[in-house]
Amino acid sequence: MKPATFDYAVPRTVAEAVEALGDTERKAQVIAGGQSLILEMHLERIRPELVVDINRIAELDGMRVEGDELRVGALVRHTAFESPDAVPGPLGSLLAQAVVNVAHPPIRSRGTMVGSYGWAHPASEWCALGIALDATVELAGPDGARSVAAGDYFLGPFLTARRPQELITAVRLPLFGENTGVSFIEHRRTHFCFAQVAVGTTLTVDDGVISDVRIGLVNSADRPVRARAAEDALRGTELGALPAGPRVHDDHPFARAGRIAAEQDAVPLPEPFADVDYKRQIIAVLVARTLLEAAKDQCARLAARQEDHR
Ligand SMILES: Cc1cc2nc3c(=O)[nH]c(=O)nc-3n(C[C@H](O)[C@H](O)[C@H](O)COP(=O)(O)OP(=O)(O)OC[C@H]3O[C@@H](n4cnc5c(N)ncnc54)[C@H](O)[C@@H]3O)c2cc1C
Image (cartoon, protein in one colour):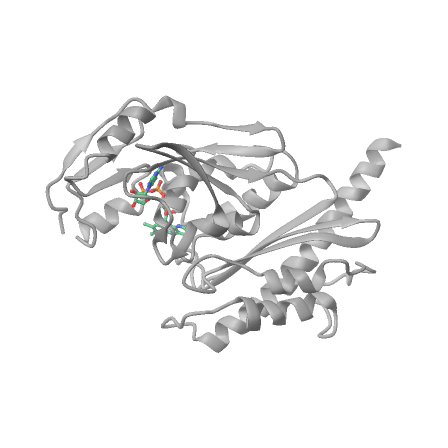
């Protein structure tokens, strides 16, 4: 199918883009990478009267460290995160582990992290990480700029707190110190499918005790989920000796946290090849595994730091 006809605006500044979007007479869509929007327009599930192409707005490009945060501009493509060195510290490793699960290389070379926030697919890896990490979404609109915490931003499937006249200019993510370990694991039917379930985890350990933990669940509800009940069950727990293999015993705190995430935090929706029980089982397993991998990563970072100090 071909898209219905539409007008096309190519602003050069954020102010011009906001002005174009402010035309409330017409239903407008921003186009960034176009990897979701173009498909939807071809299927005529979205029929914008105006498409605002932000690809020539230089101020939206690039990512940089600002204080203890990474600021990712609206034109930064998925592929920018494929090297763990692109972003400093554990956050770089986490983003690099996650990004290889986002679609496939041609889509990653055009699609943007911020576009994923614009689209708000419940199976988006970036959106679940954003909610787990307390990301901040920067918006520019006719009334000026505002910031929204990711926890208040995702309101449902493809539904966000962004107003139709607003442009997302950037997403800010917190950087982590070397006492934090990270892990991201995804379960999907084939490499080209969206996740049936995926989990991204950060684990911060001080003096052998878990001082902070963030768990993001992908495709485990009608929106990205932060597994707060599971996190609460883990904070303050002594890490103890870690098993060498990829699994923990059923009575290990990580396994218990997995069951809590599956039963209390997730509200999975059935899909043709993954019913609710199946998804809950996968969530429990992946939460436990990502916690174990994050703990091992934290230990490895600690050992590397001690080696550097010798
Ligand atoms: C076959 C296939 C497989 C895929 N697999 C995955 C996957 O596994 N995981 C995953 O997360 N994604 C997947 N995607 C989606 C892909 O990652 C998209 O790139 C991403 O969802 C949107 O990024 P984009 O820059 O292409 O946005 P676009 O397609 O340009 O826009 C998407 C929506 O967001 C809005 N938008 C974009 N940027 C802004 C902005 N700056 N301000 C306001 N609104 C904005 C647009 O108006 C539109 O409504 C897949 C897509 C395809 C076609």
